[in-house]
Length: 188
Image 1: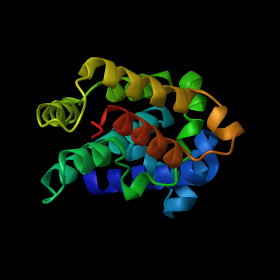
Image 2: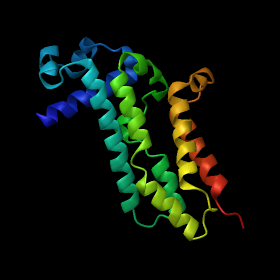
Image 3: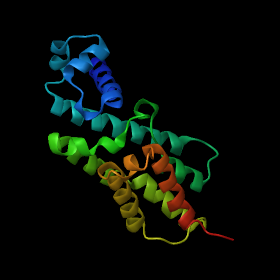
Image 4: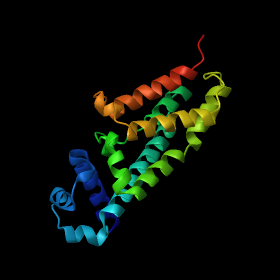
């Protein structure tokens, strides 16, 4: 049952990638080659599906962060850059700038996005503090660093500037990470 749920969520992410938040359950059924009835046995409605998609995406990001932390040979700066820019393959290519469309129609899913952006910072803060202790980063307040990053991501998701200026979400994310890390790195 859990395997089928994962298949449905991954299919929904693919349909979202192609059609945005306005995809239909018919679109999802066609993508998966299964009936809507089968989908509804596993996931009762589109509202639940969007919440499941958010949790799946953030769980995959957290798993990616753990993989970065377990990767041997990375410096504290390389680890921090990688963790801040983690984007699992299964969600790459999704236009996250379309999240604002979810805000009004699926407020539970949007609240979950906000909640997940604001939580799970322990590894990141630990790396930031380690870099400060090692003299790699300038002393900065971890809360301010987190707030800047969160606020930027929320602006990426809610504003239309990226879309208007033809900037892909991943390109903006990488630039944000570079600006933050380069801004706190100790210069010799």
